[in-house]
Image 1 (cartoon, rainbow, N blue to C red):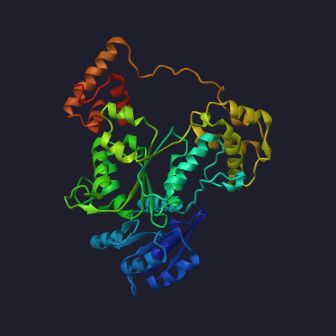
Image 2: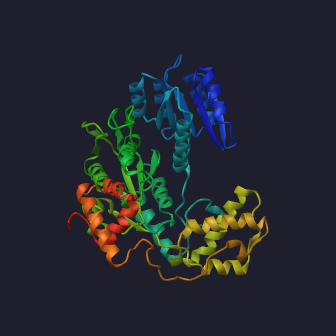
Image 3: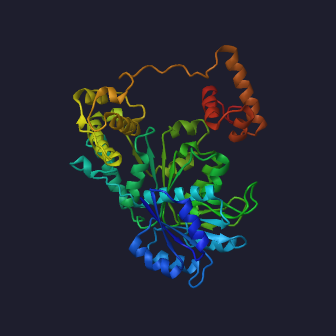
Length: 451
């Protein structure tokens, strides 16, 4: 259960929050003043504080300053009445996670709160990189006795005392974010914020604003100034997941942060200085992306100061049953009726399977199996695995033959030139997603250097 503390001197606001967050997953506590909130925080230990800026007695900004002394990692969302946006910006500079304008939009409020709760879990979830003897000791740590994972543990340990930039590579589902959090927890910045951003999950036209912030009026819909994740995470660690999906334009800004520690908000020319450690991850082959002009070579070398490659699950099969045991223990606690074990046939099925989705797929399959077995033994039929083989890759369904392939290339070439090689605009003109466009660019070997 996530414990929230609302600090607001308006009874109507407290009542509204109780109705909005009436959920068994959330415990909402309230305080009517900054002074009361500061007294309650050591006792309640909330994961998130939501606080008004204008209150009688100690105002929100001064309360935030004192709260930062109590717990610099505690996330705070500020609320402000319309017309006091600049005050809210000051709050963000003091380390607030985000802010809302009153009267607030309920869906937006819920979205921000859920994002803050995830960030709080990321920061407070301790990840062990030392291989332990009992699977229950891992809880949500990194599990592995294989030589490949032992090497990963050693690298995390060697990197922990350093402030170097790190690049984590590996297939989807191998646990790259878990390793990033382990590096963070054993680093010199462990008492500062940790923010994870999935670059592939945020539309390109919003990613730059999410990372660096924007000024009011910078683009349609920018009704107020917004502080980006880098500014929020000053002195902390930013984890850029799936950085290989980032546009070259945004890559350039990341490179500048690494080189000089500065950036500008979208719509502004004023440099902002930050001290942020960057950990990046990707499931793409960045060397090939460099050859295709999709990734900056200088950024790659800046990120690749310390490289950690995570093996696929099929390359560490000796860990499959150990992982299964740890997951079943964890899943059993969450569903309230743990399976009694895994049959020999089910164990063999797990060992024979090719695991295209890696550790993430293993956990998902075991969670489904644990529900189906209803407290009994997990059998092979509960796993519902595909045949244990490595079938040859089927032809890409969108790969056109002969004349159609030639026509497709011509259409893409024209769209690229018309859009001046802007990938987002090209994809939009062709009715494709960026991912679909990149597949076709790779197929035809197209970039601005070949046209």
